[in-house]
Length: 75
Image (cartoon, rainbow, N blue to C red; front, side):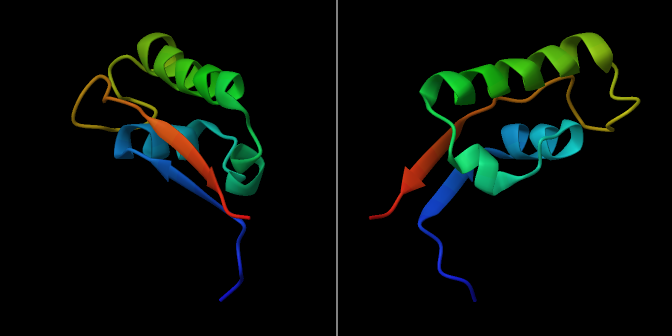
């Protein structure tokens, strides 16, 4: 097991969509500030609404799910 100095905590709606559309480099996401995390969530929401509103590319039970993400850094 590797030691990490960070953790990304995300709801399934955020995790699943971000993992599907990228970036899926969670270490990179862990370095994001609040505005970059907000932009990432907005990108995921926009992708679902515009690029795949009926869940054809990324099958899912709902058109969209609630999304939240947080980064915790350990010192």
